[in-house]
Image 1 (cartoon, one colour):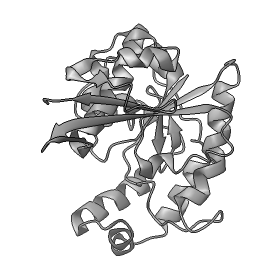
Image 2 (cartoon, rainbow, N blue to C red):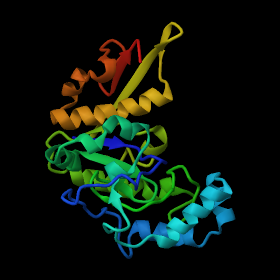
Image 3 (cartoon, rainbow, N blue to C red):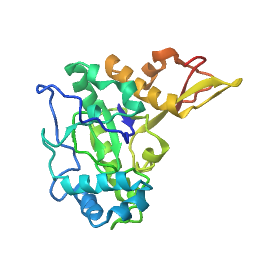
Image 4 (tube, one colour):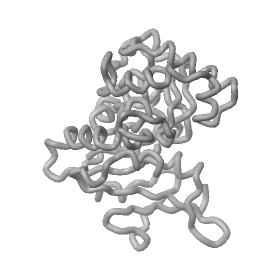
Length: 261
């Protein structure tokens, strides 16, 4: 069973990481890799081009142009950091990878996949170089007009290869719509289970973005700690007050609700 997460815009390269923590190379990184192909396209664009393409301020566009220029075909301890520790958004506050044990991070390495506009798919311990490239960016390439065309088949094939040894392959989607769209669902040889997290507000349950993002990270953490091996086990998820609602759920859509954040 694989758990899919979205990346985060915010990055943390200031907090130190233990020298004993393993670090691996991303699957789609290398001199002639898909990631290198995208960097080549991005390097051809000016700061103004990047600002317009990604709707960024002049300061942020300049920062990311510098990042593309500095990117190398293989991340090292000097220019990269393990992905689960480098990403620093709401999802990763829920995952809180820095407090997981080496054994738990090892399990996560085998069962958690982070979708990425630049890297396609990352494992938690894959070395991540600083970048910004959201999956929804309309970056034209030889495969089509955007990153969905670029990654669609590649990501599905990668996930199928990761799941090939499973008798009953399952993908648990904890990613946003923007990122899960990058997966060619028709080519995916697995059952897909979506997890939805709702809050009680103004007399009804609804998805509130900030809480839902954190909850996705919490679910990934719970799965890692408990070594969740089947979708059925996920019904026991109970972190920060969430409870599985069987009546609101469906076989491919698990709904978790809480009345107080």
